[in-house]
Length: 358
Ligand code: PLP
Image (tube, rainbow, N blue to C red; front, side, top):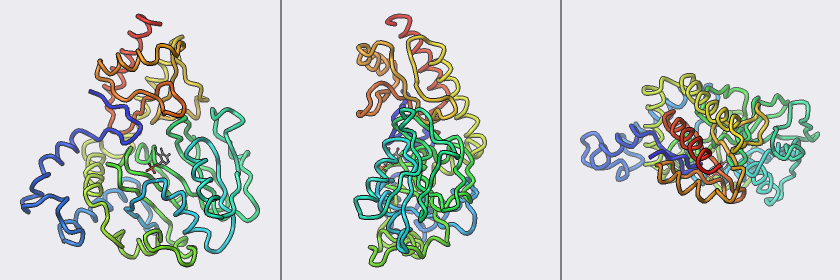
């Protein structure tokens, strides 16, 4: 079976196999990682190794903290303004889809000043705003955007260059390719796509932004407090952290790093888009330069065949191809753990379905 779920997504099979081997007895200690104190030397070693491997994979500069938090990417929609707007200013947003809109709405609902600095709405969310389209407010404290809109399948093909800290929701494309972390003030990502299981949220934050938090911020929401405590102000999601560490090891040793991962991902996406474009039956509306490499939405020329398509795909072992409930259609998520063979099998199935039913 191949799992095209948008999230929680497939994990690399070697990672799950290693977790199974170590499930009851972690390296001869007579207990599971799940049963260890987060303060024990064994778990602290797991946590530190995961951070070191992530820093190596993304070449995270020294002046950034790496935090392993809870609450999902959605909690960052409110934690970012709480941590960055303590000295005033306006949160600026680029709106390119549902997740970015939620981030803006959350900041607004908490009473912070917000400004829409650019939007893909005029294009029907088929094209991201260009650098020249971005118009910050005069008192912008930061600019937030969503690198890859998971539902629309719309991805930035550039990193904006603005005079204020960039904050980016990288939930659905982090670790898909090398990334110049130094361009950002804050990067965050829910783990359940390219990092590990749900329940863990990764945050990278530049040191000089740690003193901008609002007074009376709860300590669990406070980047500075979390950084000082090694992400252990309270009990962290230890097992998810351990599994993320196994994924980082897999990326380093089995894949060979993020350059190698990017090459594989580019090939997977290019094949699927080429098959969609070559057919008169399937279509994807996104401008080629902004097509997501991770989430490929497509529709059938005859939507009355959607249910049949999904049922037959499932019978063929191709799981979770339904589009997001808010938009319908189909969506194939091609995260790191989805092998190239899965894409080949999907393309063969789509072509066969078109011939029989199209
Ligand atoms: N941001 C993006 C780009 C997402 O894809 C998702 C979830 O799919 C979220 C935020 C919300 O993540 P969470 O469920 O971890 O809060």
